[in-house]
Image: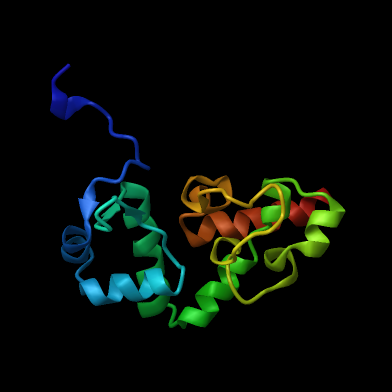
Length: 151
């Protein structure tokens, strides 16, 4: 098998911020704004250069579609991400939920908080299933559907 025929891990950070800006036809400043708002967590090299994976690009496409086609604001997107039931995905105890800002807030995604609960403290949110498994809006909707089916 030739090198070009190998399947790349969709989570592997390969693309520079400039390349991703070109792919998505947005400015580098727009991508940095999404990062500041914690809508995206790019991989950062020791040199602080950002790298993006194919899944990051897909997440950014979803963000762009939500903003341009659906007219979502950034706070609306953050609210949408806050609905992801992280407490079910990374099971938490009732005590952890009571102490968890993400569980008790609907204003921003769990990965935007400095978590103090044992299951999330000192973890790289970029590698967490809560972040990795919710790249597009349909996945968020399906997770909410699954909660209602459990009842």
